[in-house]
Length: 149
Image (tube, rainbow, N blue to C red; front, side, top):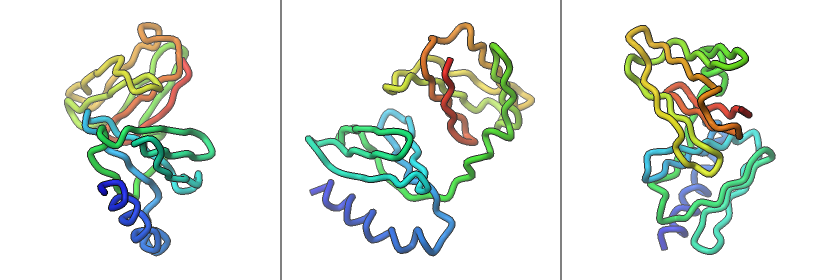
């Protein structure tokens, strides 16, 4: 029943998406993680085996419904995190973060790898040489990026 209500909710909000500045489907998980799906990437949302399956042109996620806190449609600036990030060969420096805000690093399957706090200047440095060599998802209060380490 919860799944049907979720799909009805998404279907009813679709016309509002066209009329507003909404550009993301945001899936908030019960563990505190968030998954973002850009509407420009044509997300297709289905339900299969008690999982919400979301496919876009760039990624696919199969999320157990019992792990989902909520799903929202939001307007988010996609470029913000790029403007606040400096990437070198072995470090990523995040600028203009809220003081003591978290920079969370996850593997593609959602396992947390590292959580780092921004310093008193709103900066945080991730040393890529100390992180697993795989595709990583890095989430800040400004947005989320994917890095092939």
